[in-house]
Length: 172
Image 1 (cartoon, helix red, strand yellow):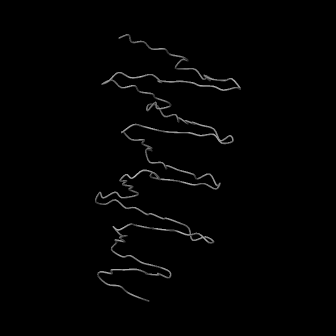
Image 2 (cartoon, helix red, strand yellow):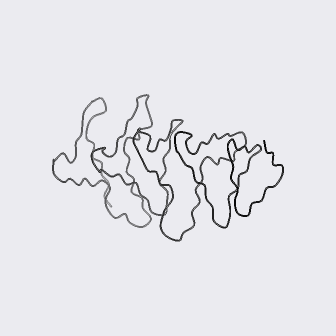
Image 3 (cartoon, one colour):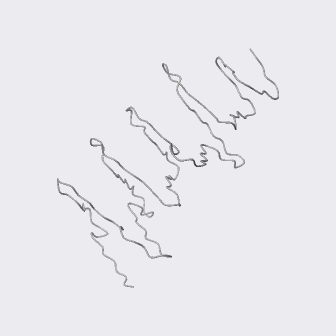
């Protein structure tokens, strides 16, 4: 095994490094090799965690039908921030956001804001009150459970099919 490092640019310099600058088709392959069993290939982009400066990392293009795919094997794709926000489809244009797969007879667990740590709080809003917005919550034979210390319905509630209410139901 041979180990080597290639450094482009200096510590006290400002500059630009361009790979794949042609106006035709480009393929830039970084860490695009087969890794031997038991070893790890690590690709780091803009992740210097020291200093007080700010790193902005932009991946992908907003031109035409450009596509960005983040993928992993049986591990995870993790989006993390140290106190900031994770924004998905928030640029003020019409979007479709799909979480979970739409094909294959597989079991999925999708958790949103489900931190069970004592003292944590979650404010969760699903849907919009604007215009003809519709929100559909559906469940198969396992049903739908609404659990909370105070669960309120602030509009008309239509109940059809077999329904079970436990505890107190107040109708105003």
